[in-house]
Amino acid sequence: MADIIQQHVDEALNALGGGDPLVMVYYWGALMSGANGSQQRTLSQLSFICQQCDNVVLYHFANHPSDPWTKQQEADFAARFPGIRLVSDIETLPIKILNKLKKLLVLCFPSLARQVYRLGAPSQAPNYRRLRAEHPEILYVVNYVDSLAQINGIAAERTIVETHDLRYFRRAKSSDGSLVSMKSLFALRYEISALSAAKSVITISPNETYFYRNMMPNAEIHYIPEYPTADAIELQNMESFDFDLLFAASGNAINVEGFCGLFADMGEKLRGFRIALCGLICGRPEIRTLAEQYPNITLLHFLSAEELQRTYARSKACLSPTHGTGLNIKLVEALRHGKPVFGSEASTGALTPGFQSCVFPLDAEAMTEFLSDAVRLREASSAAVDYYTRFSQRGDLEELAASLRGRSPVLKAVRS
Image 1 (cartoon, rainbow, N blue to C red):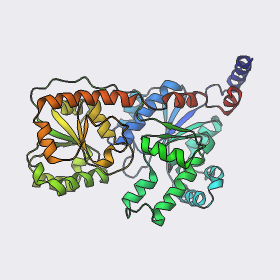
Image 2: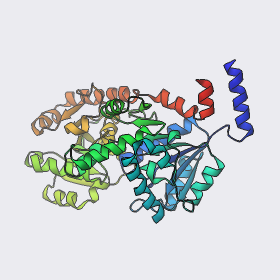
Image 3: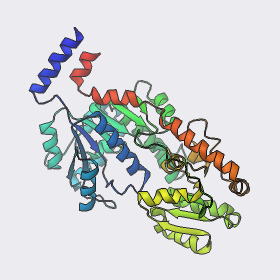
């Protein structure tokens, strides 16, 4: 009987043009360079959504202050995701003002969050306004909690928020470092109020998953450590290596501070290691100055995917000296390439148990002993691939896929 009812509902929706509701993914800046972890994460997210849904749009503001889309990136995106429409608008001053107002209102009146997020400036964002008129039952997938306010009016109850990291901790670390300062607590109040208004939440690390589930016990939370788009790289039997340690990182201040802090703590002990850096971190003046002081540091700058894979193969192990929050994408990428990692406590905090055979503390003496032992290096490399394979298979992918496929409120009511 339920199948018959479902069939009639599907037919009715198809007759109304709503048989395949639109899924709109929002990420403000450009994506195709994959220059940082959030871009890489969102690209793999898009691949996963395309496997589950047929009618997908990527929406963004074209005037990102530091990372706008280029014509070449748009062409690259069309080639990689031929089934996704790329739609953009300009983030105007009225949208920016309304963004700040909505955040303030949600902070003051959490119970009204859904009504607040529906607010929009009617004359702004014409392409988005056209999408909403053509597809009144959009399912939104937005990256970062702040996007709920940034979009020019959104139905939070039909929105899946990919958090990327815990905004509360990130704010505390980037300001006075106190988790109980008023600024940090206001950030926490806003974050929980905003996410509680959403349909569901995607978390990226187990620690943050536990935190959100405790803070929002009635929320639908999907723990997705990795989207299933990348297999472990087959191990290469290298007889010699060009580098002892590799740090692949974006120009994010947390990466720069972590690497410079590592040398401030144990710089003289690290002079004997051949250390390579790649990614946008190489362009930061602090890093260039450090490389001048330590000739054993090689700056490889930004590498293509093929060049990066070869660089991983040429390196014995990797570094992860960051002190940020969330899942360290570069640490996971190193494990995927079969590379053991020497990481800070903060960078390993998001990993599930079992990493101790391939992820080690930042200790110069231990690194010296380890990197000179070919047998231990091979064992740790094999353990890295095994751990990555197990790690990438964990999580709530099936539940998220079901949420994407059952995205119509009418269908969800019938199926339940």
